[in-house]
Structures are given as C-alpha cells and as structure tokens.
Length: 287
View (tube, rainbow, N blue to C red):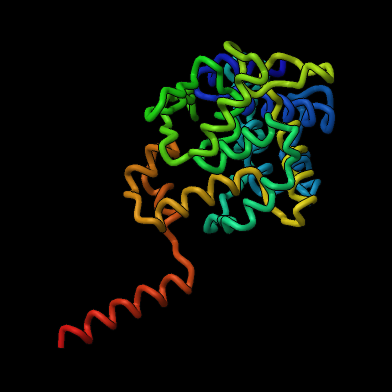
C-alpha cells in the first residue's frame, strides 16, 4: 500500500533507489503517528520531521517531499479531506559549495580496498573516474558496457530515467578493472555490480546500503571522512579546473541545468592567487 502513492505518479521519473527511500520514509511515518492517518496533525508531522537531529537536512527534505506526495494521493483518492502538509513550512535547501576530495585522499581510500575485492575496487574507481551517480552505477547492466578498444563507454540511466552515454576515455583504470571484473565474474548479462555468490549474494543489483557500508569501512581504514557522493564532486571539480569545457562536464555528469555544473567551478584561494599573479605578470610584460 505504501508504494501506491508513489509508483503511479513517479514510476517514470524516479530511480529504484529513490522509490525505496520514499517507501522507507513512509514506513517510519506510519509507525510514528496514529493509525488513522486522517487525524494526524501538522504538529505530529513536524515532530516526525525534526525528531532525529542526526539526520541530514537532505534526509529531512526528502521526507517532507515524501509526505507531500503521500497526502496529495490521499486527497485525490478521497481517503483524507484535508492536507496537513499545507500548514507546514517547506524545508529549504541549504546553499553550500560542493566539497571535493584531493586526489591523494581518493587514492588512499581506493588503496584501502583489498585487491581481492575486485567488485568494490571497480565500483568506486568507476564512480571517481567518471563522476556518475552511485545509483547509476548500481543499475549498470553488462549489456550497457562497451569496452571496444579506443571507444570504451557505458550507458547509464539518470534522474527521470534519462539515458546518456558516458565516455570512458579519461577513465583508464575503470576500463582495466571493468574488463577484469566482468571476466572474473563470468558476467555477460544482468547487473555488473551484484552480491557475491560465495556468501549467498543475490544476482540482483547491489543495494545502496551495501555499497554505503563498504565505502564507510574503507574510509575508516584510510582515516578519511567522506561520502560516496564526494567522488562525484571531486571528479567534476578536477575536470573544470583542468580546463575541460563546462558543457562537456555537464554532459558527462548528466546535469539537466548547467547551473548545477557551474557550482563545481568554484576555485580555492591558492588557484585564485596563482591566476592573479599570472595576470599581473602578463600585464607587466606588456608595458
């Protein structure tokens, strides 16, 4: 029942991981409020949204969005007469610059992955060298991978199930690891990243929670604090700082709005100082 408010409306717009997150939010919600959802008050909803201070602002925003969709569904189907969400202020998105990791930090984390765990090393290297979203990587099928020499690429499905081709031209280690991983796993169809059959793993796509747990384990071993999404931030920043056109980076990352890509164009103080010194030197030579 909990998936019904989401599936018909957003089935073509949301990836599977997002739908699972929304369903999880709804399960927590119905456990926290009266069984009769039509008598739930705005105050009770507000308490649910703010009760756990350990949750990030992004999680609270997602839960707010989930409940907005849920109550619209209840109204449309005559289950509820009023929408308590109308009396709550939206949770605004915090404006903050993306925080990239240094190449040294990423290398240290990747080196913390045991050489025997080829799947994880391939997954996180691919995320770093291409900047694709973790959900896109976990949904990757063997048939979406083209490792033709000098034309290596993958096909991914981003937000809204929008299809795009991601070139692996600047991802040599990912190409090498993908070849090894697919050969070693004898994988010619289905999910590229799946559970390990030696330990009862499913042939279905790897769950985000499994990838998240593995990443945190490697970060702890490397003594570096980072999220999986930092890999995407880091790649975008590196490409822009190296002079790759913003339109190319936008295409590679799958941004619909170029303003999202431009967030990564922010430069640090050292880069600003270097650029200004170069300008001053050129200006001095012209006199």
